[in-house]
Every structure is written in C-alpha cells, then in structure tokens.
Length: 127
Length: 204
Image 1 (cartoon, each protein chain N blue to C red):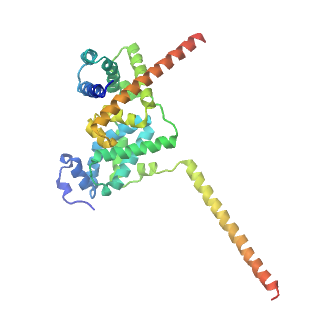
Image 2: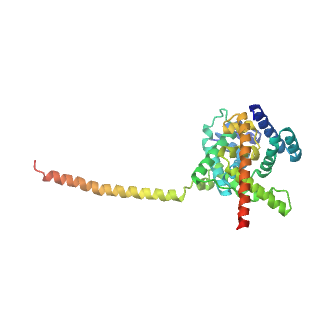
Image 3: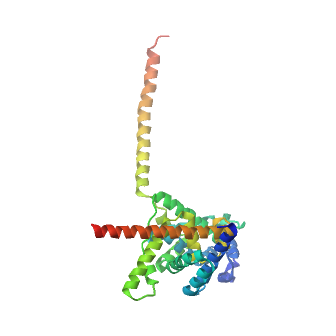
C-alpha cells in the first residue's frame, strides 16, 4: 500500500468512527466502505463493537461524595486509605528498624568493650 | 487562602483555565474541576485496571495528586484535561508495573446493562463477543489501550488525544489504524484459540 493510500485509509477510518459515534447506522456505512475500499469494510465491525462495548462508567455516588469531601475538607477517609502502604512494606520496615536497633546495641556493647580493652592494654603496656 | 471574589462567580460558567487559576487558592474551584472530570478519569482507570476497587483507589490518587500540584501547574500547551489524564496514565502504568501482570477485565454488569437485545441466545452471543473484544483490548500495548479509551469512552478528538499523548493529529490517525489492525489480529487469535479449545473438548 502506498503512503497516500495509507493516509486515505486512515482518514476513512477516522471518518467512519466519527459517523458511528454520531449515531449513523452501521449497515449503510458498511456497504459504503466496501464499495469504496475493500479493506475498510473489515474494520467497520470492529469499530462498531468498540463503540457499543466501551461505554463511560460512573463511580458510585457514595464514593464520589466521600472523595469530594476528603479533597475539599481535608478529611482523612479515602486519602488515608489510598496512602496505606502494603503489608509486605510494613513487615520490611519493622524488620529494618529491628535490625537497626540490634546493630546499634551490638555496636554500643562491643564498641565500648573494645575501647575499654584498648585503655587496659595502654595501662598495662610499660613505656 | 480563599479567593473572596470566587463566591460571586458561578463556577460552572468558567472554562478550565479560569477554574485552574482560581483553584490555586480556592478549593471550591477545584471542586468544580473534580465534578467535570471525575467520571472521565474513573472510566479511564476502570477500563485500564479492570476492577472497581483499584479504579477507586487510583482515581482518588489522581485527584489528590492534582490538588497537591495544582499550585505549580502552568498551562504551557498542555491543557488541564491533558495534564489530568497524564497523571492518571502514569499512576496506572505504575500500578501495572507493581502488579507485574495485566488483569483481564471481566465483562461486568455495566456492559451487560448496555445491551439492548432481550433474546437470551443473542444476549449470550453478544456477551461472548464483548468478552473477546475486551480480552483483545487488554492484550494491546499500553499506548494503544489509551488511544482506544480516549477515542471511544471519552469521545475525544484527535487533537485532544494528541495533546494527552504528546503526538500530532496525523500520528494519532496512524496509530489508530495500526491499533485496529492489531485488535483484529488479537481477536482472530482469541477466536482461533477458543475454537481449538472446543475441538479438543469434543475429542476428549
């Protein structure tokens, strides 16, 4: 397919999509598409399926009201919920804090012992 | 700090740029932007994630992020709508990365309710066709899913889609063509897979 044919096909697909979305019936469009460009007809069914299947979806009114209140009044509800971190991250954070504490205590114990040893060694060593 | 003049203004009459300017200081203006875009963002996120729970969480995150960054937002060729969709797109992309998989959307009540046919056989056939279409849709690369949603769910023009995806109108038309080709191939592959499953079932 040449570049100009390619662009023509792209424009036709765009136009068919807009006409289907504008409420035109699919059958005349299909006939028209098959008469003008053989390839085009194959796409009309897919475009029609996408058009009928992908409808906008609304959230529940309760959710919409709660989120609005949370955003505008700064209430914690949904905001707090979405900021909750996953349990595995909780566990990892707790383990990291525990490991940090253990290391800190060990360092205090062994660190001071080593200093004491050095002092004792210094005293015992004759000048 | 609240803008004393905003109370006298009917926020519904303002366009997005004016609302954004007010929303930097007045949460009521942000509330109007929220009303305008909640359903659009929710629909977008819902089709990308495939379930209500994640759609609600991610939609909330989009608006929380928008609210916290709106004071820094400057409209430099990217309209507010495009900015909001980019936030949504990034959060959904992160969500997919964290999930490590792509969920296949279930054909739920929303879509079933949209069917006009009352004949049970026809309903079942249409439901199967829609399941196949949605499965094929979720097999597409991220940017192609985004294009389909913006075109069919949000009914945006190529120029609006281009602003969100950072492409020209011509590039969007070309991507749309390639997306339809890919979708057709995916549907054929699903259809062939289903048929061979059924054949194997008969043989077994």
